[in-house]
Length: 280
Length: 255
Image 1 (spheres, each protein chain N blue to C red):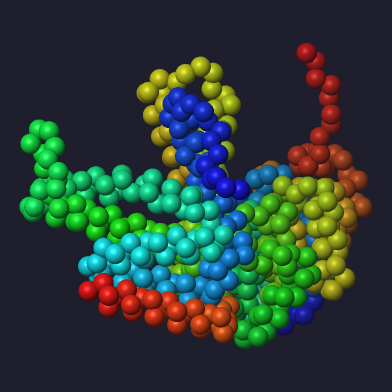
Image 2: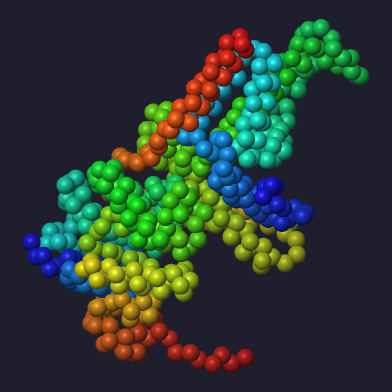
């Protein structure tokens, strides 16, 4: 499975179709991520705690680095790691760079023109791209793309529950890890419920709804979903109590470090140290 | 302590938020090793009764005793009583999604014994044994939201199997299961019976009752117990089943 978002909705004609499309895409992305995490690959074979420490180390290195070449090298490393972890590289690149212009590009674009410095390019309407401006933009884009790629590498190669359990290595309280896990688990359940509600409504909708009807429909479904989620939260609490939950939580934390994990931990440590030293 | 009596319910009434009646003046007794069916239509109060028996709700009126001791909110506040009770009684919820709240099957199945203070070695041993008994070893690291309905039900049962309770409370266990999973579930309940466990199943599935129950309490839609007895007596009383909305006569629909 190489592509993720298989669109079953060729034309998003209204809010109903659009919402269905978004929900379906989210669910498909979740399934694809789980499928990747089960593939044989470099990152999949490592202890989740090693991956978390490595990603954290690289993130700190990227944040501290003042060298464009080092940042580019870190980004290139993420692509190599992705390839070694059986993640389709084109998908990996697209996943990062398709979203980047919207979140970072818009913020960073003015810096291209307003940062004082030697002129690099003269544009019409008196706009000037400065060398310093371009360097600033490149720094930010490389920092963000490397950071997003590193995080993506972690979550695509590790089942979410394993990531959560491994967070205990950062001394996160078990109850917080449980809450994060439950949030993740029930978001998907509620997404499926929302999907069913939209599909059921769609199957009974003839013709096009006007904007007011669409808003009313969305409000009704949101209200219904909220009510369902409230009921479910109280039932889940009862289910936890029924099996001995008394406010504190005990978990298994089934991790075992192997020689291979220690070796890679050392490799990542050496790499992040180099990134920090050379990036100064 | 009366070792034969598991639960004794006396003149119990329960209303949600003090207004919406779910159970009205019911009394019943459950003995150890019994396989009891609570038979009733939707909304008759079966699920509420199971939650009361599991010490999750408490009666508006009347009383419940479990293993010869009063089952009250105050009693369950004591760690000692709570742990002893939770180790002996397990509830399988009607909606498996409610019961499977952990991020992975392994975490789910290990949850109860870990909370009840068993050692990690013992928990691991019980988890392996429960996963093998329910033939779901391959689901060990899967996330519950990616499982089918039948798989979720097996995980829900495994999550109690690790607790090894004496009393199994099951709320509509066949709901949403395909015929093969239903048949497997019947076998599972029968195996619990063979082991001498007490099983209380709330259902309106007459076939399940016929195959697994040794005694039956019937609830009507006004939240009362209207009959109790052996499966042979109850299931042959068609008028009773019809009156309680548990069976219906097919009528030819005229165009």
